Figure 1 (cartoon, rainbow over the protein chains, first blue to last red):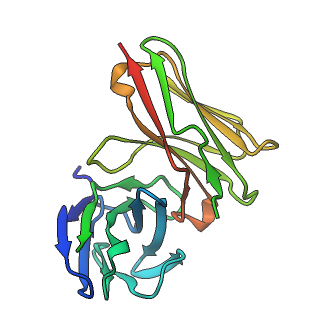
Figure 2 (cartoon, rainbow over the protein chains, first blue to last red):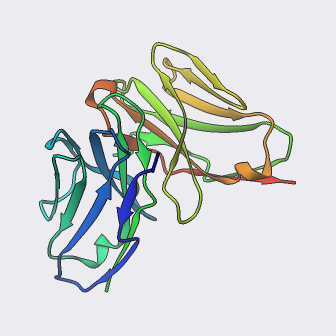
Length: 112
Length: 113
């Protein structure tokens, strides 16, 4: 069974641009959550989607948004990029809302 | 607000010995706890979890202990192997509020041959 797949693996963007990251969950998993990892703040929860609906949201500005499609694939979007958005963005999927989450390898975003 | 804390940024142990990684939490609403291991350039890998109705969960060389009154959990690895060298993250959540997990800052474990 394939694991969680995130694309792209690496991305360089300029301040003010927007970016879209993609996550394909493990087959059969319906919950997808997103995390941001930075050296200073560690792993921080962004949001979670289940059955195409956002179920939980972390403490991030509205520039961070996401969505989930009917096949459970998810995208997250960051608009008006800031230097501080440079981070590893991790996606995790789980079978349901109360089971363990499995992470992808992440997308390394660098904002210059 | 740091709801989950791992106060030891690093730990070094000899191969074959026990590794004990500690984690404290402040939110008494957390009822499910997980440990993840992370190698560089990879996503975290799920290791073991424990529900608040238990005080111990074992899986092979890995055992997690939970002390609810102290809001403390620990991960024991016995015996430690060089391949266990990685960063270990403790995470906590409300089971039915699901994958909104709060993570500790991580502990870098080095197992020396």
